Image (cartoon, rainbow, N blue to C red; front, side):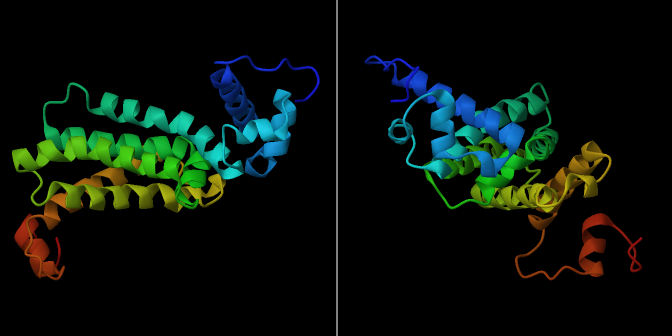
Length: 223
């Protein structure tokens, strides 16, 4: 153990884990992903490197645990977005917009989790995201605004939302659209309306102007 820090007493392991996470979060925010190392975080907290491994299997697990502290807020954001909204399809749209807004507000953490090898934490995050959306998709299927299997619909919506976020978080922030709120709303609308349209088409239907005309009553020129 590094001099200057008292040995943790029985039952205080949770406190050390919290201190390690707080230190790693500070380094991640101030210096970036590459600056987060097990040895560096141990030194910052004042413990030996093996003490870190008692709580985290390695650097990647430590980083994912830091990300999880933010990702746990996603459910709250999505539930709040649809709270009090009577129309289930509108509630789904608002949850989708909240997902995109969350991802763009935390681009580093989003990228770290979504682009990393699967781990217990990444699987938990994926399951949580699916559940938050499935909770909104189910009522839409019950109301008839979405048609099809709820799980399959949720997977498609998850894929669309992830694409909308990943498209930007992989790029420098100065290349992003200036109005991120409008971008998120359009992307969420495209995902929701696209899911609703697909449920009304035969599985063998090939997208065409004729199909569009049947769905949205447009003329042959697409107007």
